[in-house]
Image 1 (cartoon, helix red, strand yellow):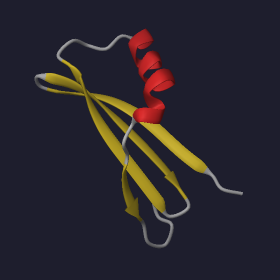
Image 2: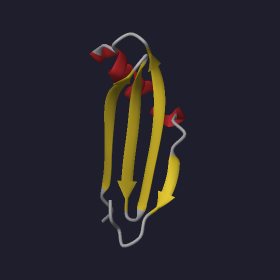
Image 3: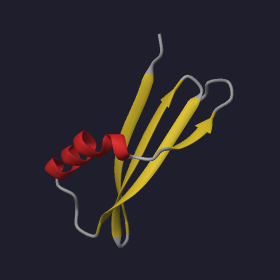
Image 4: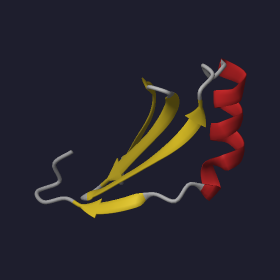
Length: 69
């Protein structure tokens, strides 16, 4: 059985807030960064981003060695 791990981190790097999406399974690690804008994102906006835009996120893929993440 495959285990998929994913996370979303919101960070502030002046002057913008950014969303960093990460996911991994087996020996594959993927990451994507989206610029959210200068205003602090509200929880409903983050839920909307995840629920409606997940399919449109273009992840960068990296093959890992020895299944290490």
